[in-house]
Amino acid sequence: MTQQQPETGFLNRRLTADAGGRRYAVYLPREYNPGEKWPLILFLHGSGERGDDGLQPTDPGLGRALRRWPDRFPVIVAMPQCPAKVFWDAAIDHVEAVFQATLNEFPIEEDRVYLTGISIGGYGAWILGAMNVERYAALMPVCGGGFESDAERLARVPIWAFHGEDDATVLPSESRRMVDAVKAAGGAVKYTEFKDTAHNAWDPAYSDPKAIAWLLKQRRTARAH
Image 1 (cartoon, rainbow, N blue to C red):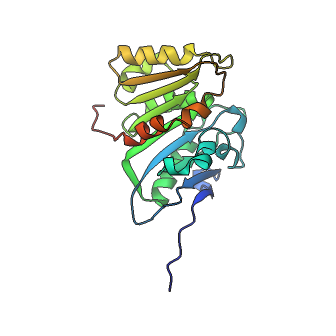
Image 2 (tube, rainbow, N blue to C red; image 1 turned 30 degrees about the vertical axis):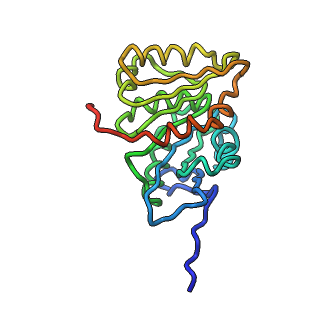
């Protein structure tokens, strides 16, 4: 009997009732093999994708890049969905539940877990990344900001931040001040500011093959708490 190939692409998932019962999405690369361990990206969407359908986070940002250049992304991607009218710092339990559910369902290489996000998700990448700096091999915040008081913790993890020079929705000074604070704390942080780019810095960021290759090359090392 021929072994059935696993389903790949964007998969709809729902948390158990005791984990909130909310919907989310998982992306499996087309070469996915359940007999191997895979790196994992946690993607935090922007304000326009908030809700409870579990589908909207798969469209803009990273989801678009996954569809256009699947060969660049040999990685599992988990996409939680922030509830309407709140921000990611109020949805930490949901992010944690999606992360644990993904670990339970798929073979994840736990020293290659990454966090990225756009707009309010960019804020989420800075803020939630600092909360769990021991978990992540690298952070990739796009057009967001965070708390400069987290700089010493963030300095323990490689970071590449992106912003649009002409962004009037989230000013580029939000990324600049975080990058400067992490650098001052001794962190390994890269920063790219796209010229002639407004709020949508995510399309050029996620379409950059060098940036994606850099992200997936990072591995978590032991860090002092």
